[in-house]
Image 1 (cartoon, rainbow, N blue to C red):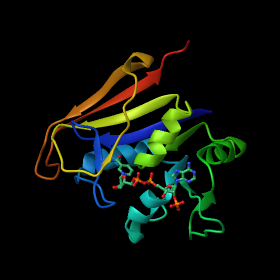
Image 2 (cartoon, rainbow, N blue to C red):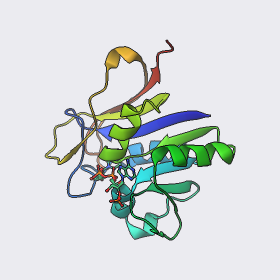
Image 3 (cartoon, rainbow, N blue to C red):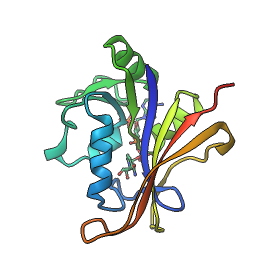
Amino acid sequence: MKVSLIVAVGENFEIGKNNDLLWHLPKDMRFFTQTTKGHYVIMGRKNWDSIPLKYRPLSGRDNVVVSRKMNLELEGAIVVSTIEEGIELARAKGDTEVFIIGGGQIYSEALRLDLIDKMYITKVHANFDADTFFPDFEMNNWIEESIEHFEADEKNTFSFSISKFSRKVN
Ligand SMILES: NC(=O)c1ccc[n+]([C@@H]2O[C@H](COP(=O)([O-])OP(=O)(O)OC[C@H]3O[C@@H](n4cnc5c(N)ncnc54)[C@H](OP(=O)(O)O)[C@@H]3O)[C@@H](O)[C@H]2O)c1
């Protein structure tokens, strides 16, 4: 089973502010949905809280929430106490690719623990005022493959590019 991470970042690796996203990009949201559909998605408790009720749990995916709160119960999600526990759950259920979907704390932890094989990164070509960022990572450890570039239009107010990063095999 592959362990993947999926994120959208601004030019300065901004990812959120006030527990919300920084942009509205339906085309990128479609990419996120298509890529993660049918898989386990693992998210931090704050990310779960930030998802509007009508979209929660994320449909067509097994939602797993990481929290240190003992006995937390969330309707529509499985609560685990570590990212690794979430990954093992997906593996035990036979998933082929599990997705770490943020937010900032969970991305940092997953990269720090070297849990990630592949990253899907949308780079939004603008700067944003943010309070949450994607962590620094060592570019030399990854092979970048461009997927697609999207120009801004009336519904997608910023241009953006999607790349896939595969971890180099040592
Ligand atoms: N641009 C993007 O692609 C993207 C994607 C996702 C989210 N976001 C944004 O990111 C922001 C949220 O990120 P965040 O960093 O504030 O929070 P987060 O990573 O979503 O969640 C943090 C919470 O996860 C739990 N947690 C963290 N580390 C843990 C560990 N080692 N073991 C067990 N539980 C752990 C804790 O929950 P408890 O407090 O319950 O213990 C912690 O409060 C929002 O602004 C959201 O919109 C952006």
